[in-house]
Image (tube, rainbow, N blue to C red):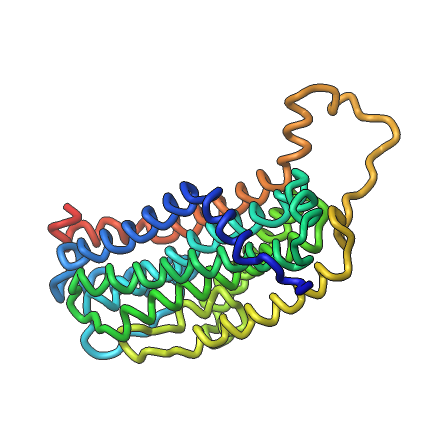
Length: 330
């Protein structure tokens, strides 16, 4: 029997089980992209408005948040849109993929679902392949909707190749980090650890991109999350980041298959440390138990939000100038 036997059946079951979760993510992200693009001409449609925001986008705080984009010649509304939205949408898509990938792999394993499935005539790698197939469908669908939505908005300066490059760039970035989530699900021994490790790698990639963008923009190529800003869709379309994302996805997928084949069901290479023989008094209640289970995720989000707040704070002194020069903002 093939190790991928009945992958198609499991994929259909996964999609049916997660259909509302998937539909919600797709509708929200596709609608967000299209609605913002539709409004951008009214916000940054004149040379005066574009000049005002262009200066702000060059500030270190904004570069740290949205990436280092280089404008040459006459700047268009579409270029400003790509500057402000590409990394922002990539971050949301990464979060979506990490959530869905760990839910479809490690969470099912923790709940005993994977063991029940593999007790039948199902290939050993079929559950993993079905989870990856689900990610491919979701990110592929979003790529198409992004491209179509941008085509319909007719932003000044937008091109067909640039619109579809954005769609495919975001789709491959999401798929890449979704594969990272699947890999951490093989390395750890429960969903909470897989989530924490996946978000730690995500945070490291974001910090590497942020530091290199501010100090050495060319070094941003070393961060997978920095590839999305290298697309330059409406200036000099660059398809290299799409190819790099797909290449790294296949490399990580190979590592994932290897890790899956060399571990027992329910186990992982990174095991939970054994606790103390006698529990501390701080662990003798439901609130302390919740804190113990969620503390790493809480600390990670707290640090991330703090860094975002610091970055926003550095550009607050320019907000007044933007409002003065932008009637729509006023």
